[in-house]
Length: 531
Image: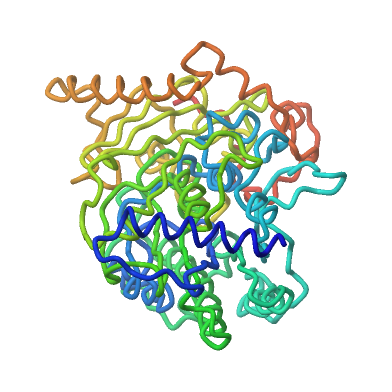
């Protein structure tokens, strides 16, 4: 009975969408009852997929989905860190609306249902492999750990090409998931690759990926151009390609099983690349994500490139609408807006005049500041500008120097920047990645996508800045952001869910031997930083 109910709901929902959205009426048949394959890389920035013209990253599977579907050029995560980014995807709500789940490594609040839990409750076969919602404590449901991204399929393993790439055989586990479902039951599967998350095997891009340092036309202006940094970037590319290889095999598996036409394939990443000044920061490469979507039986006019702004909070309402499931069933009110109108449109470029901006922000990411404090930021992104408001400018954005800048993963690039500062007193690159910031930042992102030139104090941009700030704060106030009501301290007060590293700063200062495995021992500053 449950499957029949779901089937009728789905057909009715899709019929309504098509009638509202399509100029050419088309008959709705059973093949349009959608499955979903949601593929999410771990720490990959826009534009580091081949379809965007990045030649030093080879991604035929992503490129195929873009070619046979829609390539989005302005998709943004509201929060550039693993757990809060994934929380926004699952709930359809911005970080400042998620209480503890605004933070990295939180206790996930009971009150916020995930759209995948809702799909499962409504008859979908749901599951994931690799990294689902993490890191943090998901809580319990009916006495068992919550399955925020469905049942885990992790049994199959393989020998990876490097020692740091996961042994998870993502494709084989996807096949187990498909074999485990009831016949004709629609499914939602979360392919959560742990690549290109660090660590990397140094020089694997060259030694195992066949790349050359000259493949990189340039190094971003906020890092020094050295062989070490170039190798680090190519190692990152090698791991993106590994993510893409499994995606290609999953697509082939769907074709083999006759499921491809009815499957919505969504490919993105949770946050920017794990390098200094990117992951865990509020800048363009941090929040701007790759996104391609394919649905052979459902999309209209495939092969389009769409420039509308898409926020990760828009995924939940879009998927639920396509599935014919009401988002109110088991979920807190969704803030995001469905972009099904774009999927069923035949337009390229700018499709919806209302999608002209997104809001972003962060609270506590990794620990390493006194009292486990975060670095609170809110921002707004438009076609031309990125405006940022830093609320606690006396704090260190990447974490305190003496505790290793814990909000920046250890890496060859991080080591190069720190060594140059310590030995040559080269402050330029150190400041860009680790230095303290003014309260306001404004970047002309249309010509400065690397966000190098802060124009917040330029007289000719004062009216622009004030207008963007007003728009941002008005929206935050309407969404109930505690920062807008003098209650931002609540985010610092939420407990950190990993006991081994909670209260890191105080414990480290007291001489306790702590291990923060995501950074290098050499990241900890041996002498105080006074600038």
